[in-house]
Length: 570
Image 1 (cartoon, rainbow, N blue to C red):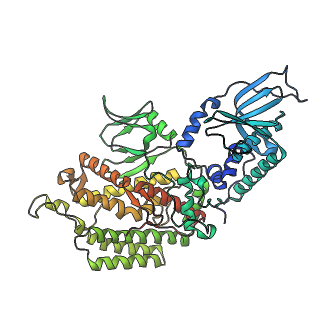
Image 2 (cartoon, rainbow, N blue to C red):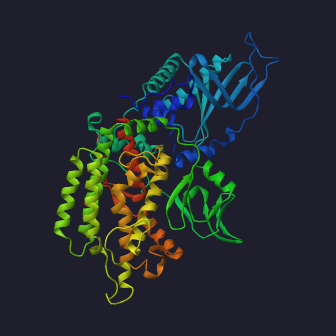
Image 3 (cartoon, one colour):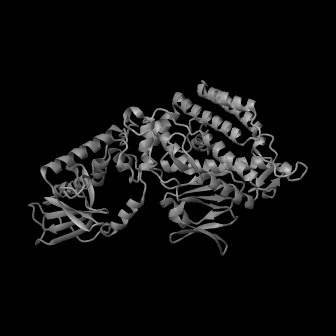
């Protein structure tokens, strides 16, 4: 079944996509059809070395009707020229066009070194160049060959446009258009060295998909390679000082309070901005954030996640259409919901076994049975009941994971007593920490879902409700105990958070600004900590795991893999 039925394929294929399709059809699909893109060192370096020919310059005289030029022949040296050819179904922005009169030569700049091949250039580069030549021919110019310029070795490699290369290029254009029209993403390459330096490997997940979908990849290795950084260098910018404002200065976000600068963060190292209470952001800073794909999340002063601002939604409309289609299918929604809840219960059980001073056997056995019941339940309503029962068992034993740091007779001791879950508002310090941790986690998943191309507000287990990021709530289920609850236990048991870090207002208890700052740091430390992925075997940070799991969910919705692989630890 195709991912989703889309509108007809655009008439013109970018010549660069012919290069990508020749290299890896899946890469071309991700970039051209789904609109995915990610930078790495190679792409950043290539953009830098390409900067000179990206600036338009020089003129390309138009040929006249009889193939001559308007006026006397002249030397041509035109940069960054955009042309199309309807009959070839091609379009291109050509780096450089050299020539005289109507005889021209396209020059394509590449960042790397010329390969040691008989042809002198990679096939991917030759077909891209040939596509440019076909465009020039269709526009009335004489073009019998081109040049690939490899910047690393400063080498000009001539490429003749012979019949074989032209036939190969046109076949690739047909194949690319047919692939896009089919609406089905091609399977990943199997254990290919091409994947190692591909900037889209963290999006493509070739080894992971092959492992989870073995019939299409019988030769796939049993242990996937980690083709992504273990951690993401970009980090959130949290602003919670009342009245503080985020402004832009060059390549920096700066945080000011009146005339005092409180903090700064490099824009390219900022994943998103979180504003608490009356903290503000200037229009130039907001515009820069939206242009760079940096979401701005808004919280109440007490830490309640209110929503977020973001730039244009991801181009992958097919993913959202598949998401909507699945959400309207009760059977498929229930299958996903079972996985989310069952994994959450199993992870709650694991946390109890690891951290409880004397793990209660009855609770451990009950959670194991409830996790199995969740997988077999016939309806969402009964699944809600199972989740509720599991929550009562789990939080009924939660206090046993809190380590008293003082004598019971001390005034401070009762502050971290836990007698069960309460919220809206939380009425004791531990519940205040849990609520804030869940709010931070749902923010993290809402931002990640938005970046990937999901609609964060339409889930499968959590039903749509005005202003509720239901998909983020679905995705966080399996991570509530592993991330949020774990941070709370660590913060309390190690003394990072103390009784003095809370404020009371009537029955409500909330973290003080100083306490919030300390807890946010503990939360970020947890997300940056590395864990061995239980399915794939490589070590990555929890923040990276959140992204991987959401991308795998997208593969389930598209039909590329059959079942959602939950994240559970031992």
